[in-house]
Length: 92
Image (cartoon, rainbow, N blue to C red):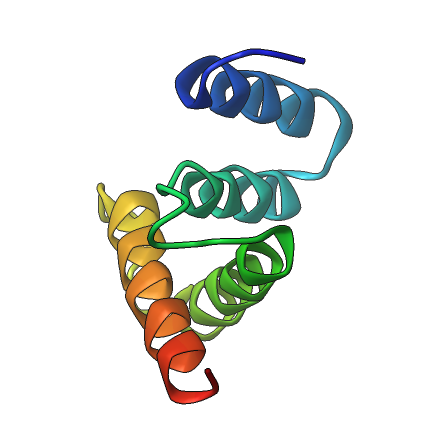
């Protein structure tokens, strides 16, 4: 659509908050942070999907541990991006 990553991320957040239940909307929005990565870091849509899956797994397994703590989304997205990049490096 020609939007930059920040506008596109905002649109994903609004759409997720409008149409999805709260927990799934949070996971979707956090996953969109992975999609904001440079093509040098996350080179394909498949890699972004892998990163989003990793985001979901981390958020689901840590929901009780980090309840009420701010910055969890960005930190989780950054960790997921690093894990995804490592997996891609191992298998390429």
